[in-house]
Length: 375
Image 1 (cartoon, rainbow, N blue to C red):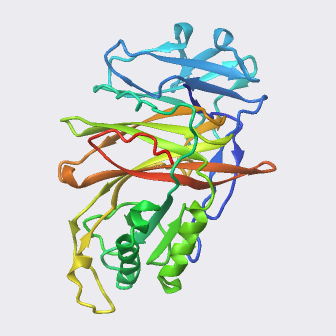
Image 2 (image 1 turned 180 degrees about the vertical axis):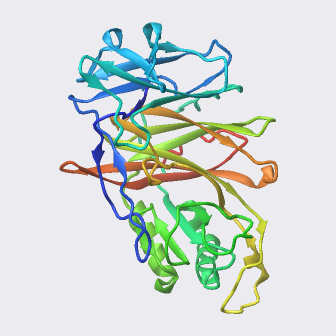
Image 3 (image 1 turned 90 degrees about the horizontal axis):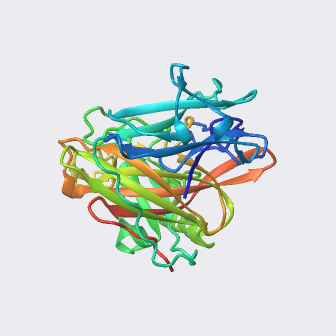
């Protein structure tokens, strides 16, 4: 299994990520076009013990040209990687680019400069969750709900009430995964996080594309969730997490495609039961609003300015690709209240444009493996 990372000739794509008074996003993604050059690796995270090996390859025009390619580091110095093999003895991010003839993976027009990164960490990387049904691609399908809120938002209890009702009806988590982004209002919000944001609160996105306002009512949100999950899931997700004593949380996330296509993957860390007095213009006097669940602590899905996930490249139906995420769990966070939202996005091509939307999501614990959820 290979993790494919586009590092040159990416096709720009645009969709409206933040609507109804929000911000506009410009998600970008890649294809494996025959004229492109890219670096691929069997691992994106290794243990810094000098023995864990990542094997890098340079693919140009659809062919493996590693033997003729030249690798460079972030300082533009030539790096000797016999057979493309890389090991590390120190923690850190190691960034590379490569050339083959007149072709180069280095491109200053992107915020990552076309650099391919291998992360080295001191703790072991968990194995992927075993797939009990290798020939099955029929997955349970859940929508991804992103709630934009804040304790200083007086109208937010109207949205919270709708989400509570959907939870009591088992719509959440049976058919949807919820993540609450406290990115607005007062700085003393216990779940305050930087981005993603919208201009008007409260607000919610379904699959990061379809906007919902509390004024539309609960049935409208149920309709959006039903619309999202009406078709077969385009991919499934499995997660094997490992939390180490130093607070390092390492996730091995596996994405299995059910259809051919371009996919991204993201992982967000959530915390429940955070206390913060909620402003309430309706004055309903419901103190349960002061306890906040599914609060986003870490969003590891930002790529070129948007949150649709990190690129996996073009996958064939039935193909599984692994992506490793590394998160720093703060000591002030309550481990027993932490869980994960992992999601996969699908890129629909229209000519040279690619428009992304989340095509499946799961909510999973941080202390045990979550296998593919087959129908």
